[in-house]
Length: 336
Image (tube, rainbow, N blue to C red; front, side, top):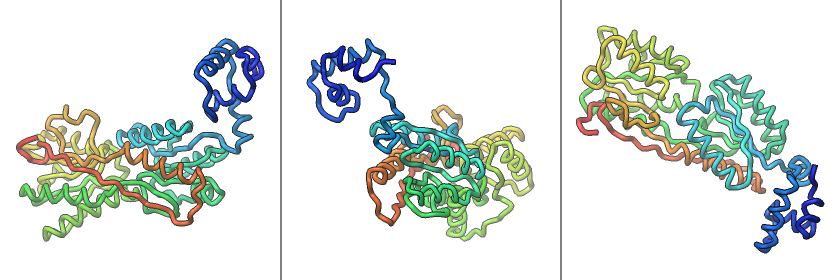
């Protein structure tokens, strides 16, 4: 296996010059740099990352735990984290909790055992946050992603969930739809609980007492939501509109509506918190709350880098970015 000494001899430079080229620690003349890079290619030299990390007490890696990176919003957050990490020279290690607190704890333990320089966690439903907090107390910087306001302290980044959902429901009520249901999903997830709060605030502001029978809870997965939506949409007091707290619940509601022959928006109005990729291809076009998910990921990584680079202030910082509502035809608007 080629060593840094082999590269230096072939390039006709000192070992320190090769190190500066490889690590970017000092400017090197362009001709010399090209000679070193050519020697690296010819020898097949690969830097011993483990040895380097032990010398620096850093691994240049960041751990990220989310429930499901396949979900469009989480996927964009992951891309934001990875973009910012790569810009700073860090490798991202990604793990999934699958909404299982025990799996979350195992993932956090595994990433900590790999000596990541920092950790970003979107807590699973019903997570106590115990393992994450233990890692933070042990000296590894931690930022909470998306699902903020739960147990533990420290830095956190998410969005305002309550206000946009309230605006969405007020918009549906403003169309004259007096009965609005909510496909809420799992209220143990802080984001879903906040969106449920926005729904109830909008109803009460309009003088309507929320009816628990019109709120679909449970796992929030499309299949379970579909079964509950079938019951509500087939009843004598069928709601005129449904606000969906996630893309998964929206899929369940749309499947149920199609199954019993309801047309959106003719027979049932629909609005969704979080949209789908290429949402303009849907027919009808979906009224949607759009999160700045990529920016949430970038901001989380920015906060983490501040800690990794030496910020030891006790007070954690909580940042909430602002989503925007895009009104289209599924809610009853006549123009997209």
